[in-house]
Image (cartoon, rainbow, N blue to C red; front, side, top):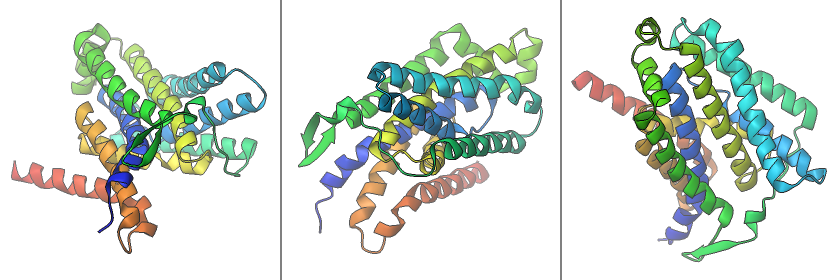
Length: 285
């Protein structure tokens, strides 16, 4: 039987980014009730902006910041200009709205930069930790640390701040919250900006760990959704654990006979199993 430990360690890096993406989705959903299918597309566009700036000789820190800011601004634009018009529609319509936005962003990205895969090189690629005979780059270590840190940060935001209290109130009942004087649009704006920031960071990390390609990064939202479903679109710790688990399962599937070529389907399988599990629990209750 093959030694699985190296594959487990290898899967931790991309799993951490899945976890981070899942947290970004849950934050928005808990405030506005919107499943943001544009998350991956926003991250991809931000990563391409960073790549272009680095190719032109801009400083690394400025390129990273620009990537996150672009994703935040696009997320904010959708949250202020389009999302309010769909706020009273059912969740399916609101989700389809973000899917349409994702296709627009994806189309622009492929038109402007082309479909050729690229690699976004980060300075943290130079150093690495050796775990189980596997070279775990500092980029992957940073991704894992960010997933935990941002989970804790968002948890504190929701539990200890006035904005967090308003976001939780909107998640429970938007109409009643509005009647009580909560400025729904302002709170939604905070949620969309936070989600955009997560998208920008995750786009940078995935463009480095996997590859920089608009279509690929756009559909990387699927593992994030699977992680969020594990957390029932509510629990941040469960979302982080789920994202890391999905990354590890994808890596381990390489050594399973007959499954290696289908390992990219792991997030879909996990999502379907968790949906079925939650549905069965709901019926029992």
